[in-house]
Image (cartoon, rainbow, N blue to C red; front, side, top):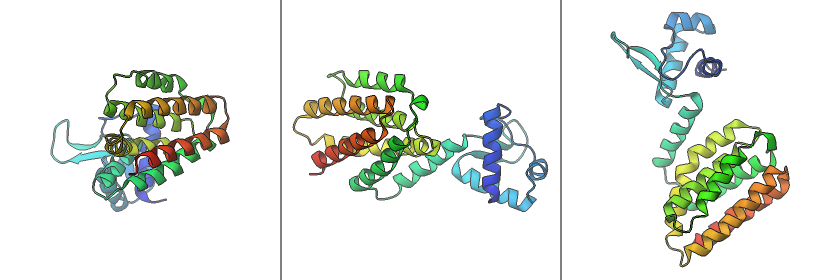
Length: 226
């Protein structure tokens, strides 16, 4: 395991236990190197990696902001890193389409009903039922709905990746949706599909849910690719 992975795993466990939280200082380099069994040079390199990811902030001098401070949970750092990658790369509509199939299809097939936050998913759909809801807001809630569904998967990294993709998904869907001749009809259809997917996941019908998600993503892509 690389040094930055060792440090990130340690920070994750410390935060889960409540011994550390965002805004807290990490121990001194010597103490942390001894605790984790890594060399000082390896530790410094690991800290530089975590700082580049946005998980920690380091400052010299004295005062409350000096030293190494936790600025984001490790999973948040992954989201920030991926969001930056999306913002600085040419990500097309088809790229988002393919990635959604991979992540959301896998999440559905490995969904555990007991892990799902179905109440939050229902609340999002209730908000989206409002016919006066602006298109951009509908699609922002739509992207968040899919993130919530992905959290029922057995792999928590899937929802982290979905959350990081959320802004890109919303941006792409808004751009395409604005060109549709009858958005209200499309929104009503999407809501019917959303509730069918939610019902299948809640009841543990994984393969059916995966197929419904496939049709849902493909249908919207085909409708808006022109």
